[in-house]
Amino acid sequence: MSKNSTCPVCGAPTQAATRPFCSQRCADIDLGRWFSGQYRIPGPPADEENLEKPEINDER
Image (cartoon, rainbow, N blue to C red; front, top):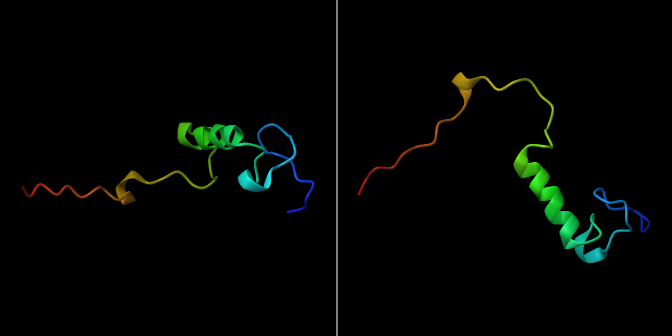
């Protein structure tokens, strides 16, 4: 990364402590976009048969 890089959220210059963002606020906005599904990694649709099912440990 160059010293003149910009924040991917707002376009302001980045800060070393929060790189690649300009502030913690922009980092949190970006994380919220991932959590809400606004960002997606392209690929084929998931086949529901092949999805791992969570193990339920019912030992008490």
